[in-house]
Image (cartoon, rainbow, N blue to C red; front, side, top):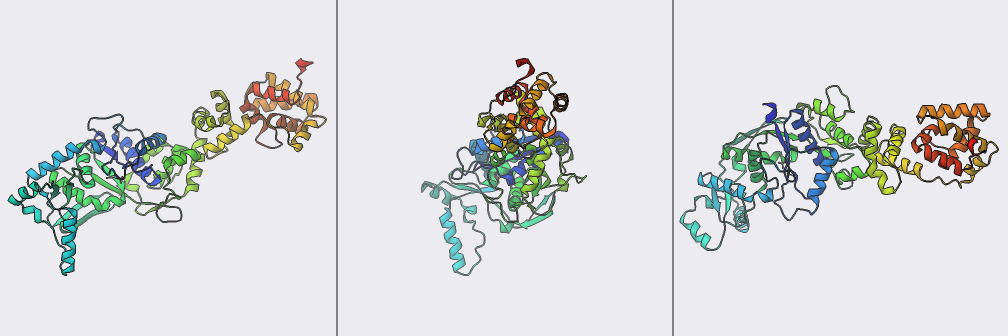
Length: 481
Ligand code: GLU
């Protein structure tokens, strides 16, 4: 297939937030489209109004944006094959369904569901197989009478017995018997399309080349293949991906993996780690490498490497990957990522403060929230009332130590390594070394006796704050006399 012809779609129903399971389908579709220089389309399947949830569309878009899964076409930006919300496409479904009626491939069915159910149970009660219920297939003059009764018909596809064959890229050739399907509804009497009909009409009109979705939809595929046949279009390539199970096995539940994706953002997972992790959960890289950045995932995605078995969620691993992605990021980008985590704490930090902090803590944390907690703690005015810490400031060498640090760091170049060296050198010449030098300075800066490398703390805080904290803890630089 020509590369530019690859068009994939993610087609969620706005019935709730994205969770890790359905985000994975979005990720694979996106990676595959981008790998081939094709298009990635988002379509909302919102015809079941009773299940639609207010705000779900926004949350889904926000989740995709957070993961960095940009769309070429979606309801917000439009595109050549819109609208991209099924509820806005009813006229299109009707036109296609009526076209099939005209060709004799579909027919009007005036039966209500209740009548059909009644006939089914009557057959069962009589010991007969329910068989095919196609009484409306042959309706002619009687149809008009029924319409006069005020009934509007559903439109059904004629489904004949015989093999319905199709191919799934992962499962190979499959077939079922049309006799098992019955005459499928295309449009219900209230004009709403059925899921299978709307999906096929949309995938055709939106020129979708590959349908990558959860294996749960495999049972819909023969029905969809029949619709492609009826509409005279070659089906796309189907790729049904295995299910994601909760940690320890079992279905994803609200407590285990099925909570909204935005929870993981809140918990501080690096979004690239989520993309990396959910990719790995589906396919393995040829090199066996687990930590893959987005460009590597894009280069290496290979649908033929998708495993056949269900994948079990391992959040520990996703967390580990989050740490890898945090470490791989430049302090500048990491600082930008940290803004929404730090801001709510009201810490007054500017971009440069955040960038220095990111440089110092980026290699130590896994979740962005951990980084934010550390940074917010660091920039909060130190509370030096802890008695043990207080005693470090009351030690005989404390004041000279603070003065040494103040002098050294008034002029020192603001680089981590230089800060350490200049402090030690100034201490040497003043005769204050080791603990007697570091402890009071640490307490002056942080209010604590322990913590990260002192020069890192100073570096992150920045010269102005460091000197102010040293002064408020009692330092008097040479210049003060
Ligand atoms: N709207 C369907 C769902 O949310 C997806 C349909 C499809 O991918 O074909 O499960």
